[in-house]
Length: 136
Image 1 (cartoon, helix red, strand yellow):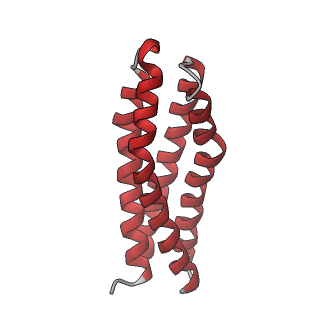
Image 2 (tube, one colour):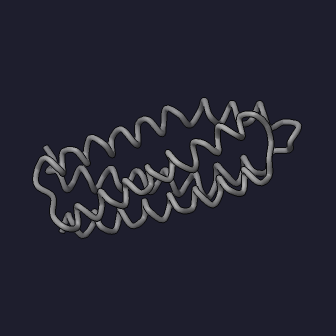
């Protein structure tokens, strides 16, 4: 069985991989959808990505809980803080932006979502770097 730092490292790596894919591929493609096709594309995106978000964030919560229960190192604390920052940006910026975009195409909300998403990717990258340090 892996130790808590290995689990945290694996989930941080999966999180960054997921987040980088969303930032580099998924959201830019969504942003290019014409207004006339927006509602269908946004609904399809939301249906497809929700199970992945639940799996990634769920695994982060489990690994983070295990790390906390096991007595975290300073690097583990940084991993957890950066992960929490990514989740906070999701809760206060990205999810509400998606809610607004579910009502219709709005270039201003799309730009806001893209900026918020870059912050999540930055936080996920910091979390992975810290998890690497915690594992060594």
